[in-house]
Structures are given as C-alpha cells and as structure tokens.
Length: 211
Image (cartoon, rainbow, N blue to C red; front, side, top):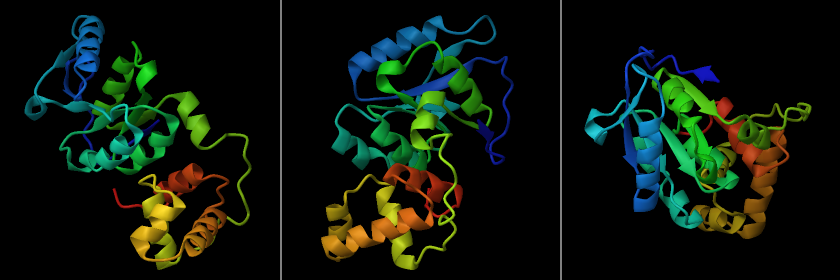
C-alpha cells in the first residue's frame, strides 16, 4: 500500500462520500445495501452523486471486451477510484488507466470500507492475492530487466496495458503479427517480466505508461 503525494490525506473520522459508477442495477442495489451497513458512528459511508463524492466505486462490468474499452473513463474522473473488475486480466489495465484500488467483482465485501478509506486518504490499495498474482513475491529479479525501451516498444507496452492481443497491437501499429510478437517479447525481456501482466506492472513502476 503506497501513498500518492498529490492527494491530500482526509480525516478518517468523517463519513466517506462515495459515488457508485455502475450500469448494473443489481450491483448498485447490492453495493448500496452493503455500504449502508459498513463503518461505525462517525466512520460511515454515504452514497452521493459524482459531483459531491470524494472517491468513486467504478464498475467495469461483466463483459471483458466492453470493460477494456471503458477503462479510459477512469482517466477522466476528477476523484480517486476503486475499480470493480470481473477478472484478474483486467487488474493491470485498470491500474494503468488510473484506478487507485482494484477489487474483484465476486469478492466485494466488508473490506471495501478499508479500501475506500485508504484511497480517499491518498493511498493505492489492492487485495494481497491480486498483488501476488501480478508480481509473484518469489520471482527473483531478472538481470535482463534493465534495458531501455525503444519508442516502438513504448508504444507496444502502452497497448499491452489496454489488454490488446498481439494481433490487435499489429493492427493498431500497422505492422505484421510476427513483428508485434517480436516487440512484445523484447518488452518483456527488457522489463524482466515473465508475463504480459508483469510487463505492464513494471512499466507502470518506471513511469513508461501514460495514465
């Protein structure tokens, strides 16, 4: 858990004003009921309109392709957001798009109060299991993970953060599938990553991805 120095630390004793940004009426009803039950006197959660909110609980939806297409919405939010995602494949793209917290849709529970409190206070939070799935703690740093990315490789890792396949990367950049695969492998080698997700996370740490 790390703090974003650009965000002020809010008093944790005040009710947290949360905007529920979801198109799913069932999820909205469930979250509204859950949030109303959380917190203690002076530390409650108040569901409000976006303009009055301090933090957003943003739902990516259940359709994976539509979720990836909607992720840029996170960049336009004027307040920090906790993203509710359908699967682990959406975690790194959500973080790259600017989410300050990520939780799996089927694991939203009482712990969301702590996550919303932390994000409102300027922290970036994630469930420990999700963090381990992104960058396994046991994996030793790769000695090859020190190379500087070329401009083309920077473009490729930016597209990786959007969840695009090699074929879609090739189409977007106007190159062949083989060349796209070559660049993806080069990105992973230079970033010391064994998976595409790890490459995105490492690129985020190095500030190579535009949020």
